[in-house]
Each structure stands twice: as structure tokens, then as C-alpha cells.
Length: 270
Image (cartoon, rainbow, N blue to C red; front, side, top):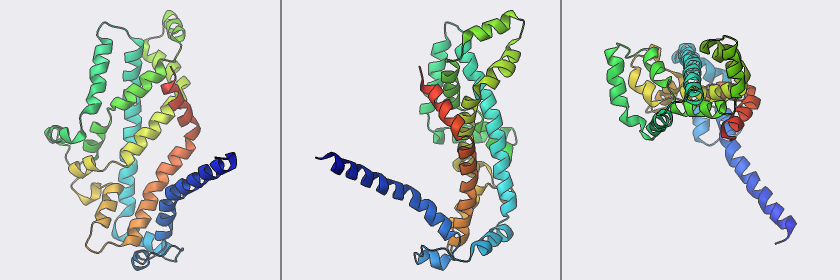
């Protein structure tokens, strides 16, 4: 096989793969500008219903309230999860004990437990604290993340221990060391963790579906599910809602992309 022919096959495969990856986004954006009938007919050109679809969502489906619910839940989950997980990862890496690795291994094994097995105990726990149909009932179970603890520990393993020892000698307590020295120097790791936590909370469906029961507390993902599962779904509104749901993830990822790559490289570099 000649070199030119090999490159031809490679670029052909990459072109097909790129098309398959990009086409759903193109179809989503085009669909948000068309009516439901035009979408069902397979129209792949831009229409004139973009404003009408947006007004339909805003007026008939309380888009502003639903969007704010998703934003609020995601902000709290991101902030609390990266703080809790980073402190746990820092503790596992910086403090030595005979049982540290055993506890950490057992901790990692919990990743093998499917969420479906935890739903009933979590639901009963939220019911005990009277958090059913509240945003805190969604937020609290999403704060602890085994993966983020593992991720932060891997990053902290690259952090110079001499700096921490020097800070202790200078009289700094552990909280001062963590928040004033360690945290500011690990921006890339925190950015990568923030992207992961945001995408996880923003796209959460099963747990909010179980906890949230009223229309006023529903998230954007639940609203899209309701729109798409009706007997006569308005596909124009569905596509518009999907576009709106996709935009925040793209903004967060591309704004933190440089730090995300650095943070991921730091977590796997040993």
C-alpha cells in the first residue's frame, strides 16, 4: 500500500468521523429554526421559526424559571463538590497512616455500585430530612464524588511536599496551607474538576426525576424530557430547548479548555 493511498484512507475516515460527530449539532440548530412539521419532513435548511420557538418555550413552558433552576443547582454542585473532593483528595495524599491505602481502596470500590442501587436509600434519607421536591434534595447527594477525589489525589501527588513542610514550619495551619498556598497553585486541576462537575450536574436526569415533583422546581433536562415524551411533541420547541441546554456546556468547556487539558495531564502523570 502506497503512502499516498494510506493517507487518503486516513483522511477519508477522519472526514466521515467528523461529519458523524458534527451533523447532530447542525441538525439541532437547523431544527430550532423550523416547525415541527418541517422537522418531521426532514428539512435540513434554516427556517424562520427561531423566534417563535423561543417565545413558545418562554411563554408556555416557563423557560426562565426552569433555566434558573438548572443554573442554581449546577453552581452549588460545582462549588461544593470541588471543595469537598479536593480537601478529601488532599487529605488522602498528604497525611499518612497505616490504613490510608486500605480506606482509599475501599472508597474507590464504591464506584462499582450502580446508582440504581442507591436511589431508594437516598430517597428515604432525603425524605427523613424533608428535602423531597427541593433543590437541596438534588444538590446534596451530588456533592460527594469518588471520581473527583481520585482526580484531585492524583494531581496532589505531583505537588511539592517541601512547600507544605515549609509552610508548617512558618506556623501556618492546615486550612491556611490548603486555601492560601495549595489551592491557588492548582487552578488547572480545579478548572478540569469544575467542567466535570458542571456537566454531570447540568445533564443529571434520573435523580432530579426522582426527587423533584412540582413543575416550578423542574430542571431544563426534565423539561426537555417532558416536551419530547408527549403524544404530539412540538419538535421545534424540543430542538430549541436542546440548543439552550447545550450552550452553557459549550461555554464552560471552551472557556476552561486550556486549564482542562493541563488538569487532566496532571492527573495521569506519574
